[in-house]
Amino acid sequence: MARILVVDDDDDVRGFLAEALESSGHDVEQAADGEAALRRLVARNFQVVVTDLKMPKQGGMELLRRLRGEQPELEIIVLTAHGNVAGAVEAMKLGAFDYLEKPLESPAALRRIVERAIARRGLRDQAERSREEPAPRLSWGAPAMVAVETALRKVAATSATVLLLGESGTGKEVAAREIHRQSARAARPFVAINCAAMSEHLVESELFGHERGAFTGATTRQRGKIELCEGGTFFLDEVGELKLELQAKLLRVIQERRFERVGGSATIDADVRWIAATNRDLLDEQRAGRFREDLYHRLAVFPIRMPPLRERREDIPALADALLARIARALGRSELVLDESARRAITAASFPGNVRELGNALERAAILADGARITADDLVLMTSAPTTEAAGRSAPTMDEAENDAIERALQKFDGNRRQAADYLGIGLRTLYEKLKKRGVR
Image (cartoon, rainbow, N blue to C red; front, side, top):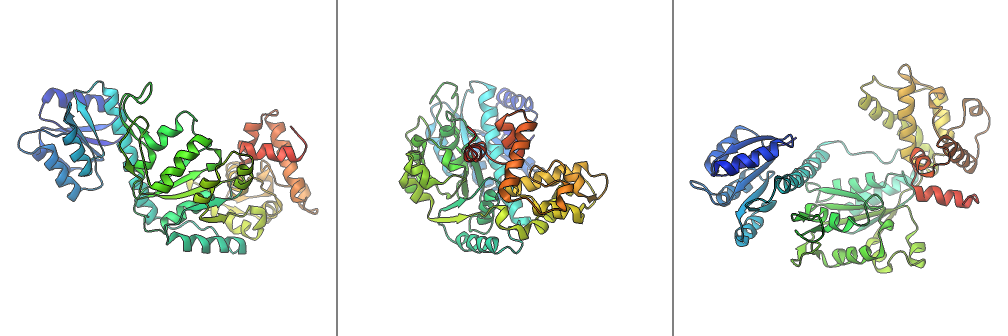
């Protein structure tokens, strides 16, 4: 729910707009002109303002100019008479989020554009909170991670494109956010998309936006995530999953720093800093014809490899304590601690899902634990942990522990590989590759 101010001198139009937004659960107030709107804006905080351009006493354009100077965090949507494109363009130049033509075709068009404005306001608020929150700690002393933190700090001070490499669950998005937090763009949005999770048919519209009528169902113009990221950092997770056609379009945006919405011809500047991540070997993907060489070189200006947890075992105890403290806060529990048996168990485990799997295991253990002390018995659901009985013997090799974890996960979900991968905290493709190495098709 958002607080929204609707400004229009026509009582019927104003009531229609307010009712349409209230039906979506928003808290809506009304004003008949710019002067009345300013009085309400002084008395109460709003996230979004929807205002007509033509009004007596004080029109929408003057209101927009005032608010850009006094409340720049507000998202402002302007209403303009049909055909008055010039007025809408001027409003956009002054900082309006978007515009709608009157008469509105349906309440749905208004609700969609307001939801997008709320989403961008959320990105800005998130950026503000991230500057206030303590920085996440990546390294706990392991040399491999100390080197990563040094690299992140140095590249953050530049505008270089970064390619984060490594297995699933190694903290690539955390690293991307840390680059953004330490950069000159920290006050602007950080936008992250998972290329593997987005529909092939919708990914282009999601990135670049679309114009009204660009395809069936495009009833209004929509800004894409690149446009909403203006001035910020754009994180492309699992970039190796993008289809070749979209890779070509992404290459153009990165090279020329401009793009067009789907179905549009107007060129839009893309002032964003690019960070990409993948758990694939993009050089192998190039040789197989699945990834463009020119895009690889554009992304890999500054490559950073995130080491798997098995290469930084000395970090596991301190990392587990930090994760457990966060889990305790989320669960509303008193401080949780690991006893020595639990510490031995997590240190001996292979964690094919890396930090993500460690966090999942600790959260399950925190739920199972009766008190504040977590024991090895509470870690019975840790997919790659040795049993309590085995903890006293020599630890299994990493390959043995990994194979055992995969075997038990597949048994648990009756051979469903997607569920097993989610349970292990690794990508489905990663699971297939591990099974292939074991001779399983």
